[in-house]
Image 1 (cartoon, rainbow, N blue to C red):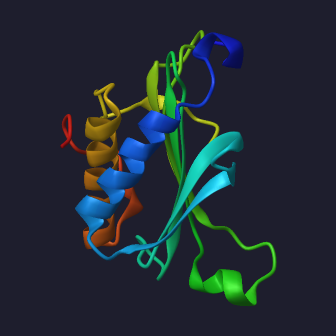
Image 2: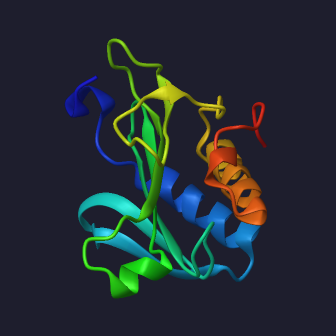
Image 3: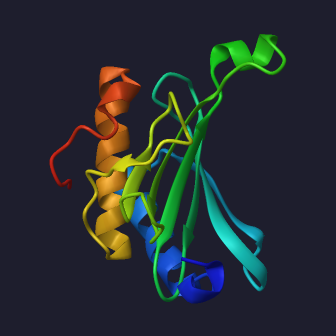
Length: 156
């Protein structure tokens, strides 16, 4: 589905995402940034956390479109990032978009961001999707195992 068919970025849905992160993670939210700005060409909501799956800090870049779709892109710096230029970072992405040949609701795993696997997140409401993504993240973070990210059955 082309971006024009998805509509523009939904501020209302991203406000729901921000509120859900703040309420659910109670103190783990380090900062919230509207990129580029809330009133100027909004593209995504960037939420930095004080914790990660393998590292000490992480970030979610979230976009919700007005007509259809979302993305929750996770980036985490690892200890080796500080010492090794160009080192790998832990990344994954949950998304919802219609594209031929891939599941509408899909998961891009850390080991291959180009892969489109069926997502365990089945919801379409911003609050429930956010809760599901956070449940997946928390499960992986508690175990210290990124392989658990897409392993839950229809969270939350």
